[in-house]
Image (cartoon, rainbow, N blue to C red):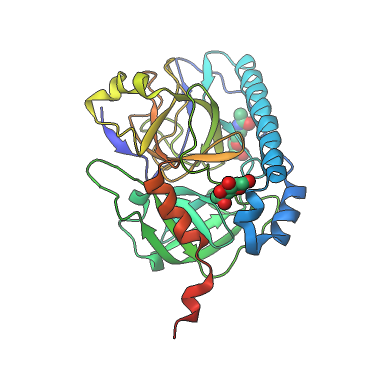
Length: 324
Ligand SMILES: *[C@@H]1O[C@H](CO)[C@@H](O)[C@H](O)[C@H]1NC(C)=O
Ligand SMILES: *[C@@H]1O[C@H](CO)[C@@H](O)[C@H](O)[C@H]1NC(C)=O
């Protein structure tokens, strides 16, 4: 039983019980974001305002609904087609979650992250502790962990000043690219949840990444995603996690109490948790992976201490270039 950050290997989520019969389904979930991407590209220099438009939020929300349906249908179909094989996550094209990036240290994939503006990517603080920006890079626009899409070098990385390593409080970090991204249907920003927004329990959310497919198992080569539910803090604190303090201000739980339960795993850290087309959390830590009674723990982006820090950095434009 190890409480662990979810750095280093990848996400979710296939467990095989007993004698599993392999079903070969080369199907993957996709969504068409091209219209939104064209608009985002035109508005990339005021992308935060663009993402905050009601009309744009509705589009994201609608596409999120479509994605949720597809994931559910696909998961069911996969289950039907197999014996005793439970699939927690499914192959998911980057075209379904185009804000997802793979963060690498000297080309080795360590974490996930999310595109939030053309220059800034959001990840977990603990993903950035070991390495200097020079050693970091990101792959984006690819469903594959090891090829495709584009690689970008990192100019600057920032860890939340109130991040505490021992308690995992305020586990959020930012990385800045050298030059703005070109948005497309496979490279798209996601809006961060509103500061102080009330978060509800039992909301469907989608977590994605290339982390481990099961606890102590191999990590994914093709992007995985899974539908999980936000969990009331009260329930979460009474779960197996309660031996390890959950800070309700800077963390929340999501997953399922059924067993085995979809979950993020090592290598998914820093990756997105999206609900209603809005980024609500960052994959942070867990107790093992996908054990029904231990949900995953996510960084709570609505927390003003976290939100203000993120927003403050990303909304600062190129002022730094104008120093005397
Ligand atoms: C998922 O993708 C991998 C890599 O392409 C493939 O080997 C596997 O069969 C796919 N699984 C399903 C269930 O589609
Ligand atoms: C988004 O727009 C609303 C008004 O529509 C405003 O109250 C809110 O502060 C804006 N949020 C951001 C992050 O700009």
